[in-house]
Image (cartoon, rainbow, N blue to C red; front, top):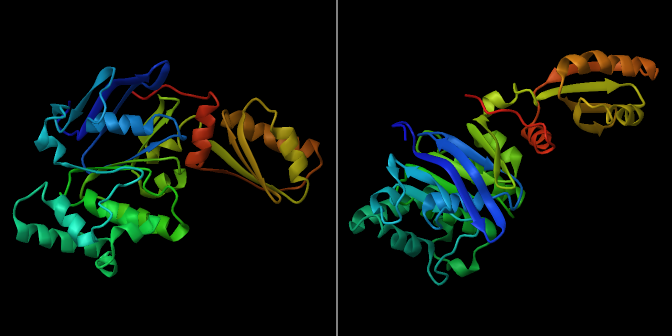
Length: 315
């Protein structure tokens, strides 16, 4: 494992009976980077995170944390990790300060230092107004904020978040994403999610898995220049639906969406598409108002990859 790695996994596999949940996955999380582990529900994201944490053992492959082979008895290494599962579990009869002091006791025996740290995370996550309420009455959004606070009690070097915005209303989701953004530079973050727009907002690197197999591992800034990331916006005065019908069966069209008279098209061959699209519009007798190349969304890249347009990983 390289000295600039927080976590490195190599050839990680896990099977449950005949189901292969994770299949020979390898990747690296570097200090200070926010990494999005993305894929649909059931893709193997949570299983991967649990193997990193040592909650379950891999059938094949190795996990390294902070330069050492992962060991569930390595308390020093585990103390550097903050973790929030997709459904955080609390001591329901406690109030937030009590619960956070309880968590703080796993990292320190200095009661004064623990209380100071509790005050810091309570303020950071807007929990002061909830300090006199029992956790059992908390909403989903309030529980997520408290879960983030407990994950940061030990001031971790690596924060692992499993679906932190799942099930939240728009305001709760915005708050959690904002909290994660504020962690940039303070800790490496590995966040699993199926909400790709969240990843586009907060992450530096993207790791995509589908059916337990890694299909992409790259910096977010590089993804839009990949071969499967060629996208066009075209607008016609009228006849967009008919044009979409002509385009969708073209072998070089990966994804296509229509919004009024505007079409968004992701293609596998930008040169071929750049020549063919105007020709198709002219043949149909339509008036072309706009035709520009743009960066694709992460969702479009993901759809393109899962439809079989996978490319080799960079060396």
